[in-house]
Figure 1 (cartoon, rainbow, N blue to C red):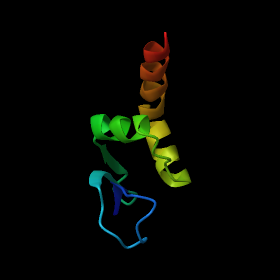
Figure 2 (cartoon, one colour):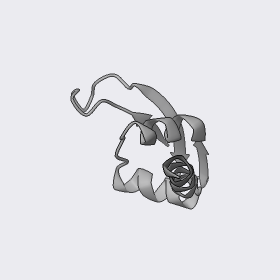
Figure 3 (tube, helix red, strand yellow):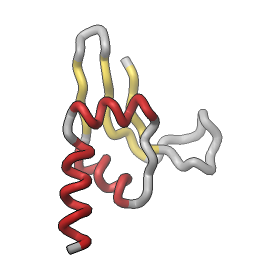
Length: 74
């Protein structure tokens, strides 16, 4: 099982999480994402890793982020 967390890039890799935003269990094929928290960090400029990007894409989180971002720009 993998935890999906937001961290400050300026802290060490093993540093404290800013917030836990989900988990992924490949054995059980389960994913839980706190979409509002993920959108919040993306809006603040967070950059997901490749793996988190793929998981978020499958869950359509990135589509929701793009839609929200486009609405705010218009």
